[in-house]
Length: 227
Image (cartoon, rainbow, N blue to C red; front, side, top):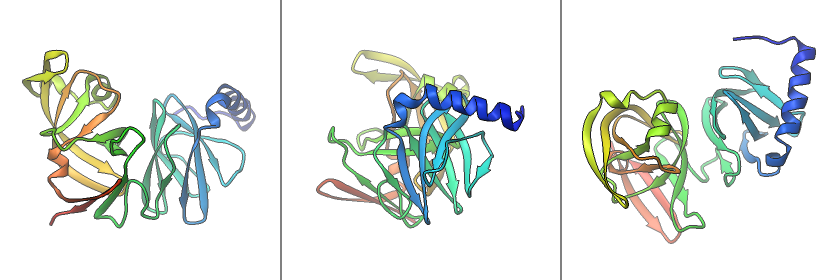
């Protein structure tokens, strides 16, 4: 990893801040302990964070600042670790709370709120890489678009070829086994998935959901892990 001098780093940070000012207004805030952290933007594999209102800090994967560790960053998403817990942030997403609000709670429970489109969305990771899910109880397995699979380093072409029925007809797909799928602070290992045509998000299907009991009340869905 290339390490810049402090002066050069400040210059790059100012440039990054200016380049990202248009999206900084829709930063995602999370609360962890007494800290507030905002993801202002992503530059390559680095995340631009604002911690407790201080000056923006550009972190690379594995770097820590003020108790916040960046696990990974890609596209417009980042995975952070704060106080031993992981949080998944995406620029422009609704607020996420580590205290048991949207997305996770208790280590064995996931609480999701219905989005504006009537779907239950969740930030999460696949094999440690950030992604956004849409809950789909009609999907047999987790489904991932080819672009996301490539971004995550999944060698899907070594998987089992399958034919997929889509709105646009029959398409080629590949059945693979994921090392892990994480939503909030709940992580499930060895999850079957299908890689196929690109989608704006991954589908959180029954290869993941079947590991939980599901309860829905109005616009809130609670998943409790089965043991």
